Image 1 (spheres, helix red, strand yellow):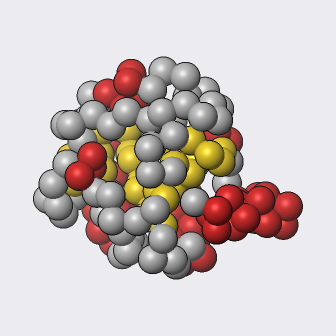
Image 2: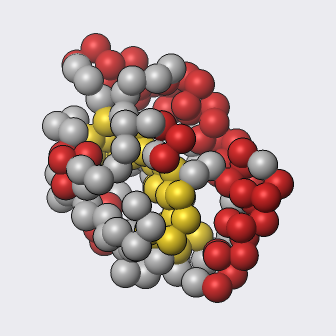
Length: 145
């Protein structure tokens, strides 16, 4: 995955109507938090809150992308995101276009958090909170870009 370019579908829905994701380049790096809809939704939102609370940097935007499986999933996801006071714009991928455009992303959720540089190329893969070593590598890469 390292070095691969992420392509953003234009039809991702912002919960706050802030416009298309592709236009959100207000920092040097983007941390993508991709949720494919196959794990516990409330657990993923809690994990996302942990990530947001730890990664406070003007050089980093955190972009959660929630892929949903059906209308019921959508109806459950939206209030969960709103009730958990997510401090970033969350995007919903109704048609699973994100994974279709980026088919190289593995199914294993351990690889669904990744850091992008200005060219939307992946420079780090994995949850930096997983270990002290992962955190050190992540912060080192973030400083470089």
